[in-house]
Length: 337
Image 1 (cartoon, rainbow, N blue to C red):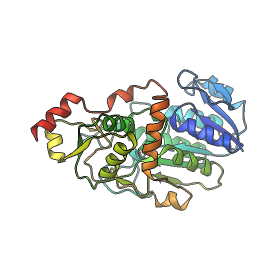
Image 2 (cartoon, rainbow, N blue to C red):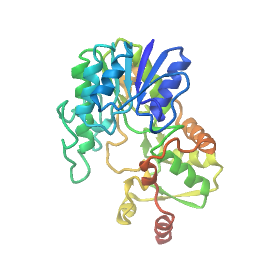
Image 3 (tube, rainbow, N blue to C red):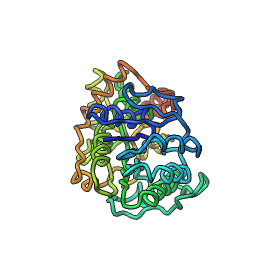
């Protein structure tokens, strides 16, 4: 199996490249070579996917049985279209990592693979779309919907779209789970968002990588929501963070209205917390039927803590600093209860 990974040095792309090599596949990675470390054993092609001559040079290294694109999250549709259109004749299929944000109803409503998508042209630039007053829909969602269209138009009948919600696990550069783990390790009273029985659906990066490779080797063409089918309650999530780190902390469950009143930013200051009804109501049964297998999230939490103790953050990424409430703000809220 000859595989091209667009990206291949960070988080999901790195896990995909390593797992593909472990399966005996011939793996090429394409990235700028500026951040992250290249995986030992892959064929390296360095270049900028937004530069036509670089993509043309990449095409000369083909053909491939499949492309897995993990590096388009910050790109406008027209740049996704550039790569897809120029590689369509030297790759048999394209597996595209997108996001649940492409749905018109996210994060307010329950979602299935058949839920309505946002509309965006395949050749749109970064200005396309708008963000609603409550953050939904978002420019990001429109842009990713356009990226999907760029792929499905270029690889008609030969593409697979994966729509994860939140991906966690060893190598995470965003900082959501690492913040919770470090906060649990500190101990003391830990500000936690009620209700404690709220189910969340993050998925392990290694399980997403395995499913992406499964789809790369398949001949099916479809789109899949990639979320944890069982999930974990917020109470069990925090407890698992405490258990993994040996922290002696005690969670204090605070009503969302109080958190909002105190200006706690959803999704970032308390990572994974968001009050919108559909944010953790994404049906992944179609993906499960197609081969998605998800390990217990307690294992993800444990392994991420072990990784943090040995390697830490693999890249210097600005999103890492966005996550987590300041100790002063947390203490102020807890003191007011």
